[in-house]
Image (tube, rainbow, N blue to C red; front, side):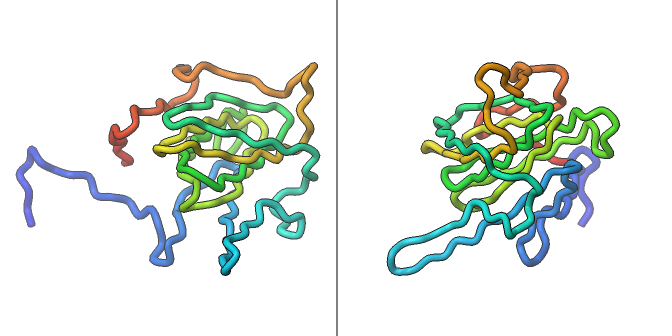
Length: 182
C-alpha cells in the first residue's frame, strides 16, 4: 500500500522475541533476572535473591523496602561505589537508567524498563549509572533494594541530580503522554 507523502509513518522496531523475551541492549554491567512465581492452593511464592544464581558477585549486607505513591518519581540518584539490586514485586513502575561513566562502552546510553506485579524482576544497577523509578500505576508500588554495601548515615554513597537536569537526556513525560521510540 502506498501512503501520501504527508502521512509517512515510522516502522516499529522489534521489542520482543516470539517467546516474549524483551529485546534491548543493556547498559554495561546492568543485569535483569526475571522472577519465577510458584502458585499453589496456599497462594504464591517468589524468590527475590539466591546466591546460587551467580547474579552478582557481592553479598547482601543491607536490605530495605520502598513504597512509592501513584505518579511519584524518585530520580536522579547515582552511587560511586555501591551496586544497587532492586527487586520489583508489586504495582507498576517505570525504571530509567543513564550511563554517566566516563569511558564506559555504553557511556551516554539510556535504558527504560517497566516492572511490577506483571513482570517481577531483579535489576542490577552498577556504580556510576543514574537511576530513576516512577510509579506509573494507580496503586502504591513497592520495591526492595539489596545494595552491595550497608547505608552509611554519616557518609552516604548517594548523589543526586534534579529531576529536570539537562545532564541526563531523558525527561519523564506526564502519565498517559505518548513517547515515540524510533
